[in-house]
Image (cartoon, rainbow, N blue to C red; front, side, top):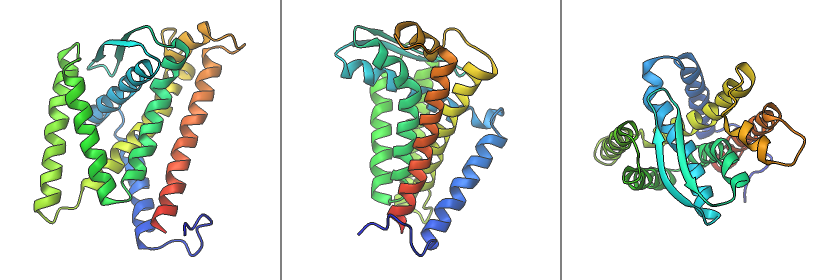
Length: 233
């Protein structure tokens, strides 16, 4: 039976999870503007753009291509589909997948499945990538995942779960930070939220939608932390 009330918290697994979650957050924020974070930032941009693509396909649209740029920008070229569903899918989808990866990190089998799914997604996107930055990112992370997997299975280096957790936390934090950077710290009129405000009949501007999406993204991170603690209890 699930321990929803988290009675008798915290056992060893829960302490390790919370510690690593905190360490990941500190490292990511401390090294945010350094070159060390660049590959992980680009993979979160990839997941952001892939979420747009998934939303497009779910609403019967056509994905013409995906781009990820070295300046941490990206674009998903679509035709058809439901525009008001596709636009928020980038930020919210990134947060959702961050939550999924964090939850997957609580179990080795789930972490293996998550790593396998991420590798397959990178292989698929490799064939629709529109620029060499994204192609290089896909190839690089496929090799990285394979190396981590081999070390996990052949050596006593049990890092797969922690790599998946790190990528999950990175996605969750990047989504919130990106919303803040694009819509509050500096207003980018070409952002998804600004475009969404133009097509949505609700009386809310881009900043308003950014705040709403940022709050939802933060809730995803909180939910991931709580549910992980329940799983590990």
